[in-house]
Image (cartoon, rainbow, N blue to C red; front, side, top):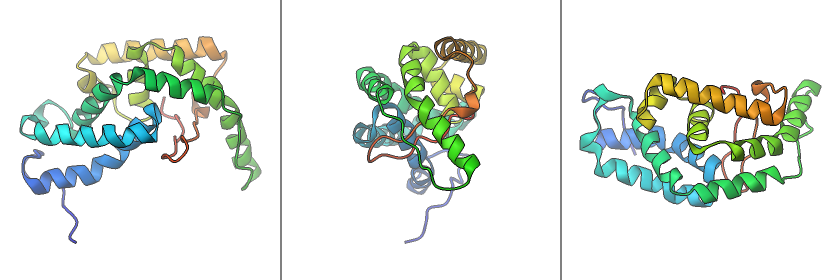
Length: 202
């Protein structure tokens, strides 16, 4: 089967081939982002709902107002917000995890994984203490790797508001964790789900 090509109609996704290309490119990272926040079982439904909603609204997407991925993450974030309790429950479980680390590989790599494994439960507890607005901004930046401008488009707020919320979120985590190096942020993936790669862009 021939793989769909990127959109050729000014970035719009109305044509079936353009939407298929957008789905193939963006579904995996959107699913991983949702799974990190609410777990893999619920993420399957929410990721599917994200793209079903995007398909229904595809004619309304305007590339001139923002990137396609920010539009998709906006839909996904709104859906995740409806499952705040599920996200809080997952963070509570992560906070109680017994740290485990892969001890294979070089000594430096093992040291990094051990440090990350030891920090993961504490980080989960710290994330659980953030406000919804702070967490949305922080995780869109760290896990979805969106720019300040893209996050502003996702949340329909000013870029300056993004920066201030991100700063407050980092300050809140540092207060909870003490002297903290954000380069060490790493979460192990939920059972059966995609890995939670490092939060090294936070």
